[in-house]
Image (cartoon, rainbow, N blue to C red):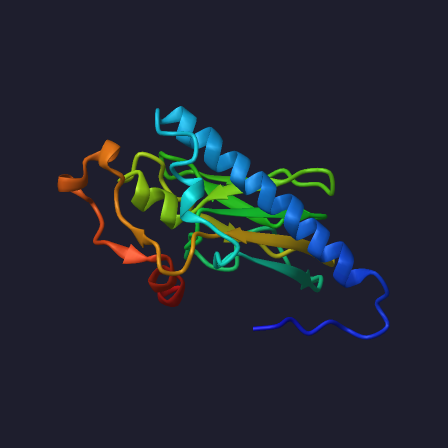
Amino acid sequence: GDNSWPEGQEGLREAMEDYYDKVDHVSDQLLKAFADLFGLETDALQKLRSADSASDLELLHFPGDADAGGSAYSDEYRTAPGAFLIFNNNEPCLQVRGLEGEWYNVRVGTERLVVLIGDAMERLTNGHLPATKFKVTPSRHERQAIKFSARFDPDVTLQPLPEFGDPDAKYPAATQLQLLQAK
């Protein structure tokens, strides 16, 4: 549906729409790079997205927590249902899990973008590119973040591409919309 824009915030809508377009372009470039990395046609992943993609942009605000100790809110991790999550944070707030199960704090800053691989890419590559497992951590300081969820078109079936062993799929086929609804 349509977004609600707060009154009295001159230029906010234009700035956010411009940011969306730019980070969406970054997503397309990442898809091209991964296609090249895996020896696919340059647009093999990109053509699964259009102007109708399920991508979205969120402005997030986290109030400070005087009792925060730097540990994650819970031991539960999450993954993103789309192709990528692209964050820009002003304060540390993320931990990602390494391949051996260890947790790492993500370095952030207003001049950095943090890219996390999503479930859709894991399915398309049959696990060759695993989704990033992450946790949000509390902070004593108030913080803001911009989160862009790069997704494929809602009706795109996410199953291993032929280059990744379609007959030996690790995951059942699902649409991008089904992955979103499951989260």
